[in-house]
Length: 307
Ligand SMILES: [Ca+2]
Ligand SMILES: [Ca+2]
Ligand SMILES: [Ca+2]
Ligand SMILES: [Ca+2]
Image (cartoon, rainbow, N blue to C red; front, top):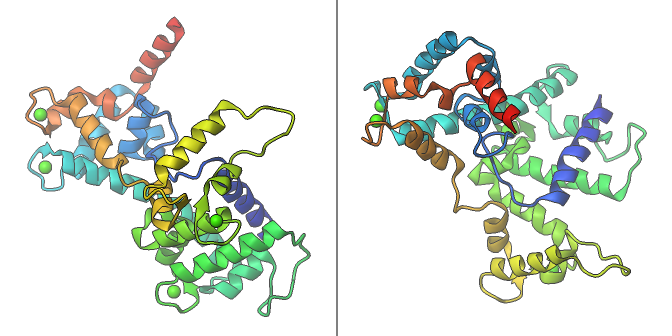
């Protein structure tokens, strides 16, 4: 069991880290700007799939029920703020479902006992209380690094410092990027990976070598030049190094809020009378924007067939 978990960790964390540093908490894995993206942002992945398979009348009936929940103050009209809160709630639910599932698996494996770091490191990494190996593992340098990183992260997520992660603390451990009070750990993990000379900053060479490993026979590809320019822009105070604040703005950009812009987009799509809010009627009239159904999917399929 613990072997499988470690493997998952390597695949999940390792690959993502190499390919893309920006932690872009998109609201759906579907392509941005498509109806599928909107449906998942508004409903969550599971409900979106469920409603996709329903006949249009049933899908609309369910939508009306959902609208009642979105309309927090029950005045019969959905504001941009109410939509934004709803989309955020949907997103948070999706994120926590994922880590809650993993938490339950770990607790079960731990015979139902509270999840202490000592239990976790044994189950997932095969290390006993004093760091001795209790399972046979291929203890590579990456393995050690991963272990040390998780130990630090565990301590940061453990708000009451009792060594045990509660479900809520474990959510932060699994997705620190979703919790502003844990953003510093996300930044320091990235710093540690990139700051090869340990001088507390990321210089151009360190930045580029994260994504490009030159092969002497080939000329440098154009996209690498692009990365160099990106570095210049990200080194806001122009001292030739990215410090923690600059790294934070890079990997956890504050200038774009997915939930806010999704809410604005949905209002724009359906606000027929242009009063800046969505009545239940407007939402139901534009049901295809909010939920899929057999018919909307049929329509999508037709559109694709034309090309
Ligand atoms: Ca309202
Ligand atoms: Ca705790
Ligand atoms: Ca450095
Ligand atoms: Ca309106």
